[in-house]
Length: 430
Ligand code: GDP
Ligand code: IMO
Ligand code: MG
Image (cartoon, rainbow, N blue to C red; front, side):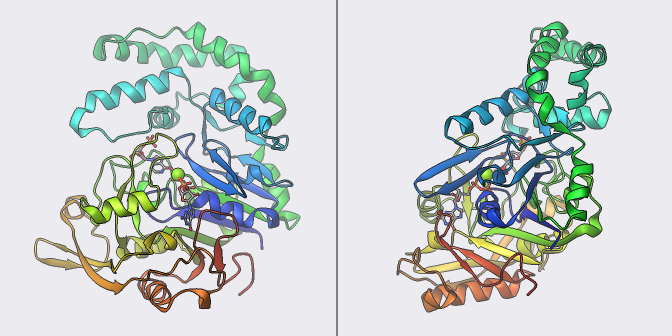
């Protein structure tokens, strides 16, 4: 089993961190290939709860080599804060590898993220304010800073000055903010360089060697399919490739190496920030999902928008990513509902859409067409086999499996590491 990719199949926060952790001890490398500290993964191990942002969730498993790939944007200050917090809790972080080609998030990216959002007013995206969009914009504009630039002061200074030349005009003349000093930015970045140096590597080469040696490499996406810059609900997306293809460009391994794509999907849907969301609930049911599922952002603490399961989105994700297996999380959150609606198609201005409409305007107006399934009341958090689930819960899983485009191999019944039902081994041949 060479490379396996884990992706979010909805709008994020599906439980990717827990899924990575679940496979932990059987994996040799866990690679983050996109995004940055906009991600928030909560992993619960025994009575310990960890919130990870920039670091791959695999860092919590002894023996795993965590890798930050070239497709990630790295805020070094955040990186060290996160590492120090883990070290203080006794986690061994010494194996971390950081790609020399990953881009850096600096003070001016964070500032620009916040001021541009404010400038957009009612049209804002609701970003996490971590500087993600501006850092990726610089990368594509070819004025970005890379990790390797930290080790050539001359080059670093030239690049920061070139980037700020233009940005300070924007900040001062358009956004009415103070100019940012290139010297200060360079000084701050250089102050981290020596601590970072031993972690920096040609991670594409190391992963190539690992795969050649038959190691298990897991690629863990941040964000999700519907937030992907190409395939998501643009412009209400993040600025990176959060879909399975991103695992290849964001790490430097060939797509042919990927043998399995695991889509993480919640038994209902959530979204943080602005943008279309057909099954969103504004009533007591939405409040029920939010409070039962504890749906508050790991990164920003914002209450998540909640809605019913959306099968066209699951099918779309299965197709875009080539999902081989789904992990269905948070089934336990639905316990106590009399009936559970599932969106099976949309209606747009009187026309039925069985698949995601390609037009964003249509998707904005899409009304869900629901099928209702009977609920269950028994506590399912102790279920460890499919047969342990109440009949109605089994039927719900089988019904959504049938319309979601791939098999459901694992079912989450609680936040804990062992609170799962495994129907098919994600690393097995079956
Ligand atoms: P990620 O960003 O995809 O890694 O997901 P988050 O960590 O942001 O959000 C998922 C939340 O659901 C976390 O608090 C997890 O501990 C929790 N979680 C994951 N799987 C399950 C499950 O099966 N049941 C319950 N109740 N909680 C879960
Ligand atoms: P994980 O990995 C949920 C959302 C933001 C905003 C949009 C753009 O925990 O699933 P950005 O700061 O990336 O430019 O914001 O994307 N967003 C997420 N929503 N989970 C995440 O990560 C997210 N990362 C970004 O709320 O709508
Ligand atoms: Mg999250």
